[in-house]
Image 1 (cartoon, one colour):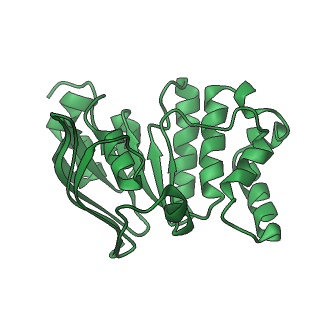
Image 2 (cartoon, rainbow, N blue to C red):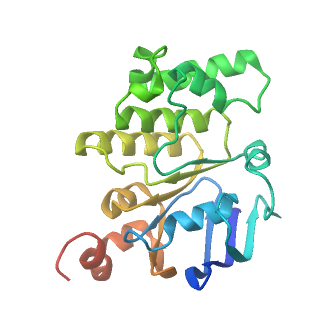
Image 3 (cartoon, rainbow, N blue to C red):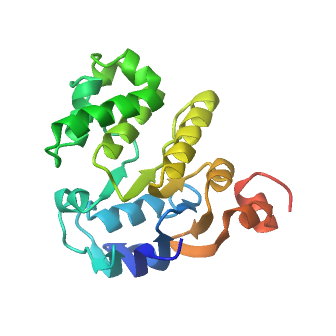
Length: 242
């Protein structure tokens, strides 16, 4: 875990007179699972969208390097081809396509048909509910099942870095547990992950390192296990007394 695959330096995002992200620095090293936690509205999703160039009209300043090269101005398609994939908040599955068709869309930048079929089988093994419903329209599935599909679809592109935006949002406690099991499993397979999450406890329990974002700024960072024991984190984000 020595080589930074993602380096963010002095990243700022402004909408008119509103400064949503205020000159933040963060990095993710190869093989790491890094989490960015914070309250709703702290600027976490804006940060991910600034990294991937998917924000609406706004002013962005600072530097974002991926795999040793700047990526500002690159299209989402180009980023996927370079191995950077994102699972957006709200999942964004293709509702009128089947589960299998969604997975094939995740592999649109590939042309190795045998490898694509092998990967579909692989992710069906990790997400057995998807295998059971392979020909079901994605829009008819539960929120948790759609989250599994969105993750599997992104993984079909063979990402070197996977960005996950609030994967537990709106899910039942049992489904949240299952989603985090899968996040750990994907990380264990060597996929580098940057996880944005409001469920601070689950995120820090899964991660190697963490950053805390507060009002558009990074207020704390460190080893995830140490942050779990930090009184400031416990009081502000884990609902415990200092």
